Length: 303
Ligand SMILES: Cc1ncc(COP(=O)(O)O)c(C=O)c1O
Image (cartoon, rainbow, N blue to C red):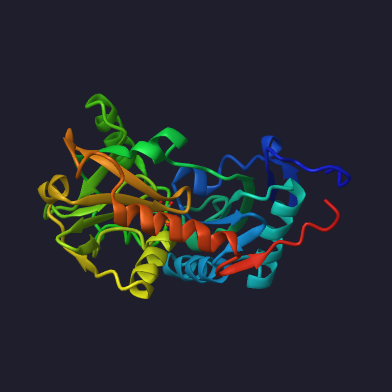
């Protein structure tokens, strides 16, 4: 790469080399690609600070071990690679993904134990699941008829590429003129949506699903903010039909923070605008982050 310039479209780290994002390629036989045999994590950089980098690395390491993989780099090396991707991009607000794949099949064998696991990373401009207009007015959500992959089949706390249930549910949302789906489990309790965790306020208590979903870092952060500010928060089984009767609903994700929901299954939530608790937690989340809260400063060197 030309180190005298930055790469605002993004930078990837592939097979030991840093490359502009548009030139990053993976070997087509990598089982991460042909079998979704991979786990990953996404951390973000805001105003030049990583948010909860250590917590993301902890989660990534735990998930790699959970599916019998082994990282080809030490934790310090991973942190260094992520930082270098961000530094070379020059991005102050960035979406930073780290991925560990099973790797190439061993010649003549389908035994996953014989594959050498691979590490890939990239930093691209910060990703917003909800655009500016949606963040202002609130998203329109459906409770999808599609069941989320059950936790008995695949532990959803191991971040994975098995997204087709969520992608098809997204089509269902579009067909019903809504914007995002939430999927339920086989007992009819709400889990999560594509890249998002769910919160609903009912009678003064903030509720979030208790199982069947990814343990999102933003979800964890929201729960901590609630504890700090004396908001009653509970992890609970939430039956699908309860969502449309909530006083407030919002979603959480690294890719956009807290996102208000104004409509569920065609029905207005509250008065149809982001509610006061949602706005308060949203503003607290962003204002704390402006000050480097739970942050690790990125060293951009001369760029
Ligand atoms: C399925 C799923 N649920 C929830 C989330 C939110 O997690 P986080 O707050 O760590 O971004 C994600 C993030 O990508 C996800 O993939």
